[in-house]
Amino acid sequence: MAGGFRQIHLADMEHGLAKMIGVIGLSPKRITDMTGVVFETAYEGDFGYVLAALMVTDSGKQFSLRQYYTSMRKYGDRTELIGSERSSDPAGDLAEFLCALGLGREYLAWQCTSSPER
Image (cartoon, rainbow, N blue to C red):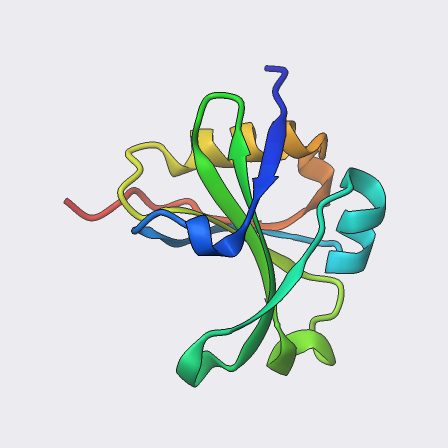
């Protein structure tokens, strides 16, 4: 499955983009070096500051990458991959997002194995 992405501004995030579907075993800086994704700094209220990037795949699905400042020291080489909480196929979305980024499954440190609640 070949695919690509385009990066968009965090302010254009769709409602419901909130489910962590995977953790990539790379720091945001390393992801930038490998893919060209540019992370923005944002403030998420009680969660504090975060480095985040928002993308849209060629098929039109949004996904984001994030790393909270509070976890950088302990988990500096981990970046969360976020998909839609309404997705009926988080595993398929994860595969599509990794493909869009040009990253193989060997970069996954964790992946969601549960189905969405209905």
